[in-house]
Length: 150
Image (cartoon, rainbow, N blue to C red; front, side):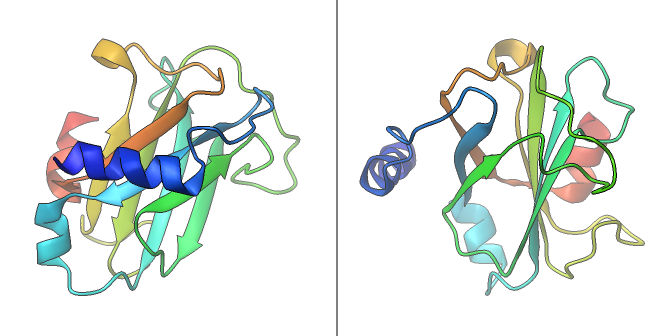
């Protein structure tokens, strides 16, 4: 039932039919019902990061930061969203994972794991290719548990 509600939101907002130049990832980030019950507000920040599937230990290729997000949150992230603005943007090629993290404090690198995490890594963790399909990320895991999975 929850997945049906999210699909309806995608259709209503046009995310499923949104134009994509084939060089960006687009999608929707939402909180699971459990997380919605645990946090009373959406204050904080949403961090969406794109990382090559075979370069897990390296920094993300692109990062999008959203202050005080309203969920569900529709996003488009491209190579222009580089972590370091002075670095030239590198085109997405190959397979990627996309991680969404809601930080209650708004800190990118908190002193202790906090917040909630969702991950999209394709079928069986094989990664996602830039192909114009919409990605759905449900933030459900506490950050501490998710850090152990990385």
